[in-house]
Amino acid sequence: MRLDEYTIVFDLDGTLVDTAPDLMRCVNYAVGLAGVEPVAYKALRPAISYGARAMIVRGLELQGRSLTDGEIDRLFRRFIDRYAATISQESRPFPGLIATLDRLEAAGARLAVCTNKLADMSVRLLEDLDMKGRFRFIAGRDTFAVCKPHPAHLLRTIEQAGGMPGKAVMVGDSDVDLAMARAARVPMIAVSFGYCDPPISSHAPDVVIDHYDEFYAALQKLDVTRI
Image (cartoon, rainbow, N blue to C red; front, side, top):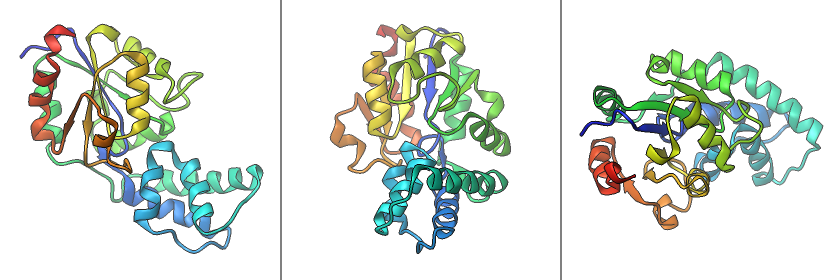
């Protein structure tokens, strides 16, 4: 299957890379500065798709705490400092991903990233994992004036990667990714191993995979030649 005209856009956290261990560690460091006990991984995991600031807010809520926006901003800055210094300490690509990216590149596909992670953090993580050079464009939550679930976040990522929305596929793990893809009228391959709760399958995406070994079969189900 040749994919010379196609753009494959990936979410980052929970889709390309399992970033949860490093995110959780740094969020618990931040809320700990407010005197809050560490939050359980299972309880906070669904908030990952909404970004680190939302994770901090949710972590405080789960422990019965409410802070002003200014206080949360202060904790977020401390989170950023800690996370920037240890961003790839435990984060790793999901099984089968690298072989899938190799195959997509060999088939001529353009690859891009569209994430609600800050752009500089996204680039730093992908650099640390020796993956940055694979992607034509990396869009973070602060790259454009809007971010997920706004469809323009995806549409402008595709444009900046040199592609066209009519020949693009989104790959993501969350209802946020799916809402954006649907609004942009771009089909989506959902990964079941990400951070969505309830499971992404409950949102009826176009196709769901449980491992990257299933990626090409998912493309065939989408029938990308007809996109």
